[in-house]
Amino acid sequence: MTAHPIAPTVSIIVPVYNAERYLGACVASILEQDYRDIEVILVDDGSTDASGALCDGFAAADDRVIVVHRDNGGIAAAQNSGLDAATGEFVTFCDNDDLMSSRMIGRLVEILEATNADMSCCRWHNVGASVAASVRDSHVGEQPGSYTSFGQPGTYYQVVFSVFLRTLLRRELYYFSEANWGKLYRRSLFDGIRFPEGRYAQDVAVAMDLYRRMNLVASCDDRLYYWLQRPDSVSHNLRSTRYYHDIVRAHGRCFELAREDGILPARAYFGLRAIAFEKRSIRSTADQEMYDEDRRYVTELLSSLSPWQRLRCAVLHGLRFLEVQVYNRTIHRRA
Image (cartoon, rainbow, N blue to C red; front, side, top):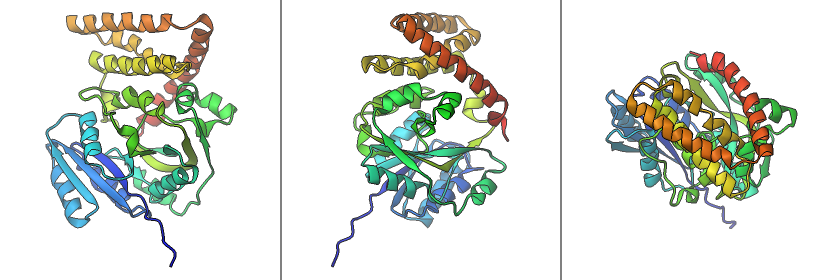
């Protein structure tokens, strides 16, 4: 009798906070995966609405669901609790108001194993919350697309991020962000790495730490993740000095690691420009002191670049800045 390999378990971590309006659809889209060997870790981060009870209900109905209740500590703390509880060979994340295609996990496992990559990733849909379910339903039955694999993920993360250039150069599949959703990681990549708790941009803060550990990334052109745009989301509303401080420091970490590896830190350069927004957000003496320290930090980092490197970073920054302005006035405002 031929022995069949055992399918690896995928741990899907969902930080949950006051998401009762969207959580049911999110979890349903995960449990509907064609790939069945999953554990769904719902981390209730001290919710004050019915989210915690909903999580317990999901666990009672499906033994693949694991619930972790914890005091509120923010998304990084919730993600870390999920990583601590995960037992799967592979791990991915899902925001508590987003949706997955039913074939997302299976496709990401397939291309990761076919290439022996450390991480696989897919494309995504930006959708308004009011139409997300119907958009997802309209894509049911789509056939798998193409995929590729490549090394030096830290380099591609830093330099392939302008929509115009990656379209012109046909490098779309070499583009991936620091967002943890839409990606499947070997869980061992997180050994010794956890998200910095109590900070915004926690995903940026560990991006280069993760990517420099990887030898190979597999990327497909299937759009399998549905990223919901809501006017009341954190990224729409938080504009404090602390918010921008965390962005600057997270990209500063990526800048430093990129420089150590001889990589042009173009994406980090773009992120460091948040220092201008930090300046505009100052409302107190403490804010001013934080900004002054960050300004010195950014100046020191940029001074390490040669004139040619600064020019290349500035050109990419200009292109990406224009693209972000268009994005903010269109997709990011969807309801």
